[in-house]
Image (tube, rainbow, N blue to C red; front, side, top):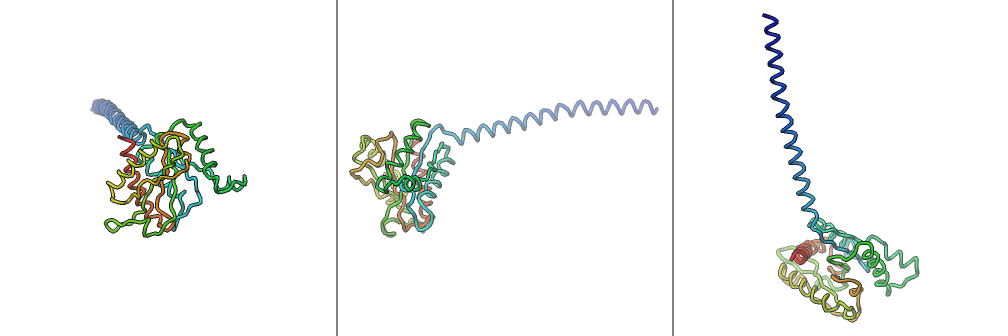
Amino acid sequence: MNNNFKIVLKIIIVIVILLNLPFQKVFSENIENVAASLSATDVQKQQNGKSIYIYNTHQGEEYASQSVKEGSRYLMQLLQNKGYDVNYETTDFELYKTKNHIDYAYSYTVSKKYLNKALSKHGEYDLVIDFHRDSIKKSLSTITVDHKNYAKLMFVVGKGSEHYPAVKKRCEKLSSMLNQKIPKICRGVYIKQSHYNQGTTDNMMLIEVGANQNTFEEVQNSLNILTLVLDEYLSA
């Protein structure tokens, strides 16, 4: 009787083990497949195949708090979250000018040197952004919509650039798109006689984000809108 009981018990144990092993394996495989699927989706979401280069010719420009360097880094993060491969120039232009006794008037010569380096290493970008801020009164550089303050934006286009027609057209389009999001958030396109390195490569733009009296929160509010517009423009 005892022997029969032991045999039956062993059979039950073997059956339970045989039944459980496949289920555990299938469960494990399903988890791995789901994880792999999520990972692939995440990668696809984070990469759209387009690249952007951001730099600040005048890195010393300040807001009421923070600087244009912090502003451009914030823009970089927003664009990365949209799936863009963003290269942000970290070279200290001001230190380079000081060490090499280069006057402020030649700031664009310095930024062009590193722009060319980036292009040589990476190749053409879908967009190149030279990020600045203006020096005007707070009342002229700020707009309030639904109780939220935004730093006004403006594009600067150099007539001396060989790419002048294309740059002007691009900036006018972006200006219009911005003002469709929030009327008068963009002050338009300011044409000047210089070149601003805009003949160096295709797809360049120089943007003034707010002015010296704007808070960083106001700058961030505007960069959130700018990111939406740039994404729409580059995805068209």
